[in-house]
Image (cartoon, rainbow, N blue to C red; front, side, top):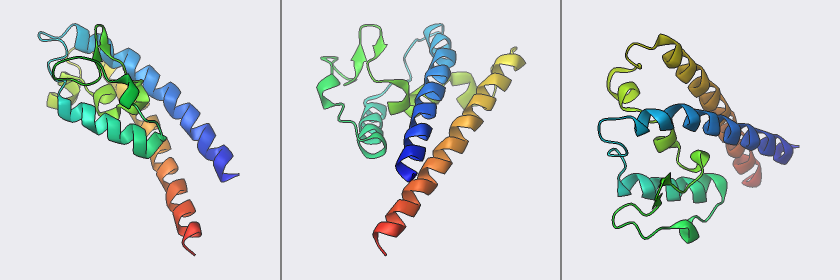
Length: 136
């Protein structure tokens, strides 16, 4: 039962992160300095999240980019749910907490983020319970 529930949560998270990517990617693309927030540190974080949270080895996906291990010709090659820090990022949200002049976009972003947060918390609770059961 717990495995089925976790699978269902995972599937929903993949969809929600894809939706978030579809909101945030255009923001990044039209920035004064597109993809300038990308950093090798975030690539390493994504690699860790993929392995520890999703059981995915992304090593084979590394590119030949000189500084960003997962940067391809059109952007990051990792799926949005494997790189949550990047998927959730926009400069406006991270600097002033909203998209200037677009309260509708801002509200949609935070509603989607709340759904992601709730599922991530539930997913972590399931993992904690499984871990506790395994150790008793």
